[in-house]
Amino acid sequence: MKIIDTHCHIYLEEFDADRDAVLSRAEMAGVGHILCPAIDSRTHQRMHEVCRSSGGKLVAMMGLHPTSVKENFQEELKIVEEYLSKHQYIAIGEVGIDLYWDTTHIQEQEEAFLIQARWAASMGIPVVIHSRNSMKHLLDLLETNRIEYLTGVFHCFSGTVEEALRVVELGFYLGIGGPLTYKKSTLPDVIKQIPQQRIVLETDAPYLPPVPHRGKRNEPSYLSYIVQHLAQHWETSEEEARHITTSNAHQLFQLS
Ligand SMILES: [Zn+2]
Image 1 (cartoon, rainbow, N blue to C red):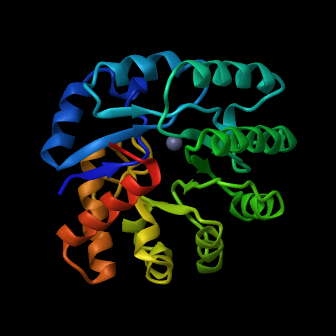
Image 2 (spheres, protein in one colour; image 1 turned 180 degrees about the horizontal axis):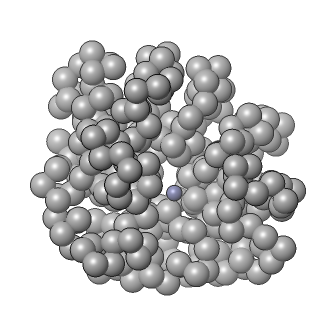
């Protein structure tokens, strides 16, 4: 059973020297589709180029990343909107709020997130949410601004059991990646208490590599370590964990 990397920045320059080798290792590891979240206008073009030349294996999203939301975010959003009107995308992402790097533009981040979430709902595609140090903030925001027909995934979910249950209640999914394999991770408790149908796999490559590759560049083939861990925590076979997470990703992203 093929597995799906629902969050991978394979188009970044970290992979320019050996992207083909990385992609063939992914193929060998049984990785099928690789979904690529956008960042901002500095990288939209290279994302499209890399996805276009992949024969359908790499699938692009479109959106403005919260760490790229500055004074000029309206201009950046215009660019996103333009792309959305011209091409088909699997999701709007990655979007959200990041209170780890810089909290100066928190209001702009909120505004940009809600605008893009409404676009996603009206287009009938999911949002891919970045929630670094802002899980509670985003959940509150989504609960007070109920956006009809909106669904999506909290990519690299890192919250508590209670927060995970709120994610599920909102109709969203949890993106689970490398941190599941870390010794001190609280994710094993979280994943046991939410429905298996709400979990999708991701690497977030080149970031957040799983054990035993911590400290190095992450890549999509390492998704196999993550699904192994998931199977252990679910006390099921790896094949079953592959099957469940792939069908969840198909469900959420309407992959053909
Ligand atoms: Zn990302």
